[in-house]
Image 1 (cartoon, one colour):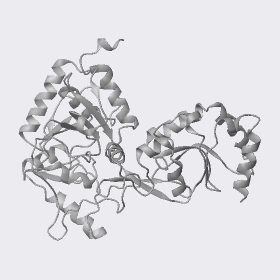
Image 2 (cartoon, rainbow over the protein chains, first blue to last red; image 1 turned 90 degrees about the vertical axis):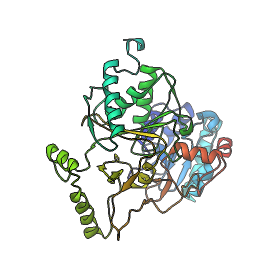
Image 3 (tube, one colour; image 1 turned 90 degrees about the horizontal axis):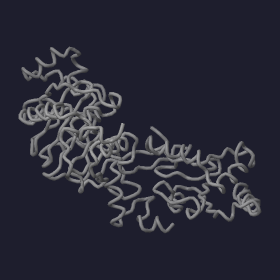
Image 4 (tube, rainbow over the protein chains, first blue to last red; image 1 turned 120 degrees about the horizontal axis):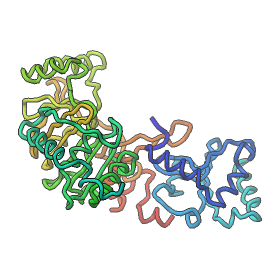
Length: 115
Length: 293
C-alpha cells in the first residue's frame, strides 16, 4: 500500500522538489541534512491526498508556506485537515522566510520542536 | 510529424472498421470474446492498448471523452490517454462523468449512474476468466462452447474451503445473460452489480490478448456465487474522509510513519462533486472553505 495516493501524486511531488521557490529553497537549506536539531525533515512530502511543503515526521510538524507565495492547487493541504490528522501546522509567508527574517522563523520552529 | 499527419483518432479507417465489426459481434453475443487483429499502439501492452483501440473505433468528433484509471482522472495512465486523443482526434475531454459521452476506464466503474447516451470502455489485461484454471486456449474455447463452467465454481469453492468465504476481491467472474462466464476486467467486486442492467453500452478491449467483448445496454449480469455463500459487493468499512460518502469505493492512504491511514473515494470526480455540494468527511473541508484556507 503506497504512502502516496497515485503515481501522479508521487511524480508531482518529485517535480515540485525539483522546482522549489526561493523561500522554500532558503528554508530547505536551513533544515536539510539533519542540520536542524538533528531532525530528519522531508520536503514536498505526500500526506494522504495532499503534498505538504515540509514535514518533520518525528515531531509531527507540517510547514505549509502560505499559498499566496507558492501557488495554490489541489495538492495544497488545507491546514485544518492536517491538524485533524494530529499535525502541528506552521504557515509562514514568503516574507517570514526572507534572509533577514528566516532566523526568527527558525527560532519559532525550534520552540515548537523542543516543546 | 505534425498532429494533422495522424488519421482521426490515430488508427486508419480500415482498422477502425475491423474493430467496429468485432464490437458489433460482441454486442450481438454478450460476453463472447471476439478475436480481432489488435494493432501496435504507441504505448506498451498493459497500458490500455485494447481500450484505446476500442475508444478510437467508437470516437466521433462530437464526443466528449473522460479517461479514468482506478477511478482517478489525474493519474499518469489517464492523463496520457486523454492527451493522446486530444492530440490525434482533437476532441473535447472532461473529468465530469455526467458530461462525458465516452468513458475509458481502467479497473473502476464511475460511482455516478451512467445513461443510455454513454459508452464505457474497459481496459482488460486478461479477458479469459478460465485462463488460470486452464492454460490452453483451445480448451478454454471448448469449455465456453460447452458451457462447462464447473471448474470456476470449484475455484470459488476452494476459496471458501481455505478462507471461509469467497476471497476473490477483484476480477470477480460473472455470468452474462445466463450463458457466457466473463471476466469483468480487474474492477473491484464492489462494482460488479453496476455491470448488470446498465443503460450504457459497455465494451471491453484486450490489446495484447486480441479480444473484444461487450455488454449491450440492460444486459443481465450475475456474479457467480453459491446459495449458502451469496455474492457480496464488499468495500472498506469506512466513510470517505474527504466527502463523507458511505456508499462509494475507497482508497486506503497512509498518512504518516506510524501507520495512520485515511480513506478517500477512489472516484475523484464523485468525491469532488460531493465536496462542491457541501458534503464533508472526517478530515475534509468544503471546497469553498479549502480555497479560502
